[in-house]
Image (cartoon, rainbow, N blue to C red; front, side):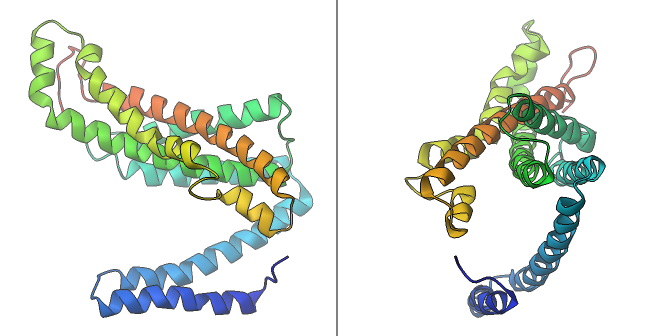
Length: 251
């Protein structure tokens, strides 16, 4: 097993320093973000580590629920930043994220894939929420830009008697597809282009590669479920915001 400790973290700072120096030399305007991000990454993860140690030790259902709710709120807030083309982005993001995350976690519990322990629920919820957040962010961005850039085609379709659903359907479908592209690419290339994170982490921790593969397959299917549900719910609600009760495109 790899030795882990603060000394190893200090040595790993060299890797961050390489990125900082290279961007500084090339005058790429991200040096402040790299410096701030390097410190923030350490502080946030160490704080989370202590918090998880506490939650894992007392195994409280309410603390597990609170942790998952906080993750969903932060994820929804972040995704809502991409909802620039319509109102109510945070509410839509939270509803979609909750649907994808809670349905997936609930099914995993009901099917006996995991048990309701903090060491399973919180890490898996984090993976689910992070991937679903990215998916709905892309869905929001794509659905807004595509509908507005194709305003004339949509209004023409409406004038010819099509419903708002029919007029928006091609752009809605493409937005959902865009939101799912990351997980679809992951499923195509997992184990060939790269070893996925969960699998790599288990192998580094000393687990059998075959055991790591089994866990990673479960994680892959879990993420496919959550991302699909989140993207579809986000798209379904968001697209409606572009049309009024008279089925007129309001952009």
